[in-house]
Length: 155
Image 1 (spheres, helix red, strand yellow):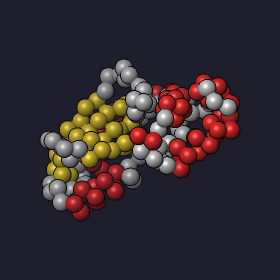
Image 2 (cartoon, rainbow, N blue to C red):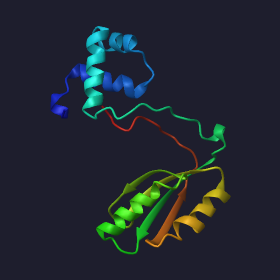
Image 3 (cartoon, one colour):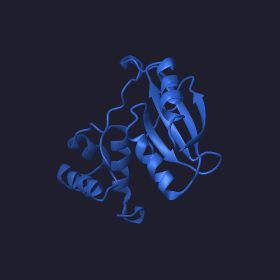
Image 4 (cartoon, rainbow, N blue to C red):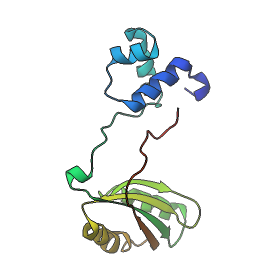
């Protein structure tokens, strides 16, 4: 299913689910203006097409003891396909890294990191990240506060 195949109701469904993934099908159907059975069929079709990848809870990291959010820009020693794939794969094993992107420009990867505190983050950077055989440079940016948080797609 491509965007061209999405009609106005599909778009409204996606907007509502991105705002509230726990909404009931009945309430969703009311908000988008169709009855519940066709609404559920549309949601399942969007899921099967991979447009809806899953449903997640946004957790309050500080209330769970994770007070530090940082970004790391990582440059690799060599940008061969095998090195890029190997580094991407190893990020999966690092709990501190919550999201990772391969990027163009001065760095090869951008890592979104969440840690309990500065000491835990520094330990990760020094003992794990910079110690990785593929890593050449690491630049870190500590966040001050999040000022905007929306779903990942404007739809």
